[in-house]
Image 1 (cartoon, rainbow, N blue to C red):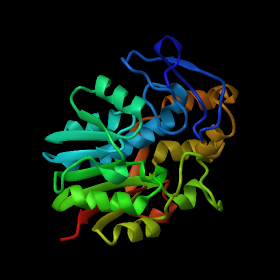
Image 2: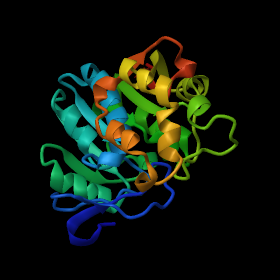
Image 3: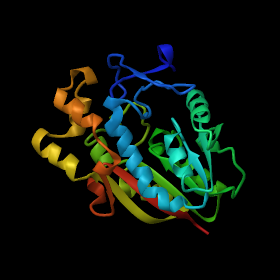
Length: 270
């Protein structure tokens, strides 16, 4: 999964093949951008990466001083961000290249390979489980949630973000992203969590003022990116996407059903 000469190979955000775009990557074990996960440092992927980064920032207060399991770490940037506030972070990913890359790139976190539906942790091992933009990829979501409850200490915290099915794949029987097995609405996510957890916050991530201003002039920034591979984008779109920051997104409890991504905070049931 590495490109030639230690570089990342680009593709379109929906996972469809695009023309190869090589981007410098100085990490010991570089990853390839396939559409399955986002990666930092790639100009045409920047909107998706910053959208993920904004969710991590919003959830940092919930990991302060805690032992954290990052369930599904991908490239590892999120686990590294959590480590800035957490006492410790154990990152788990099933994908061998991802686990290898994260371990080599972020020495401040512990990384192991494991199945999220059979977490390689003892009962009550951690205080927080973080699972950002991952549950939509899993085949057995209830088994994963049960595993989160098992490895959490009493009253432990579960942090989950996932694309909002209502806005991410509107009117579709199957998810837009071919790497997703099942996307969820806010009500469906709450129902999934209800057996093992008490949901205390159900929020939504959406565009902030700068992104909304751009869309009033040019239309949907997501649709524009998904309309074709990056080499077909207009110079204006290319420049705008490369300049997006985490500050361009907002997390709020208002109008959650209209959000782009769901952001849930839940506590393990006694």
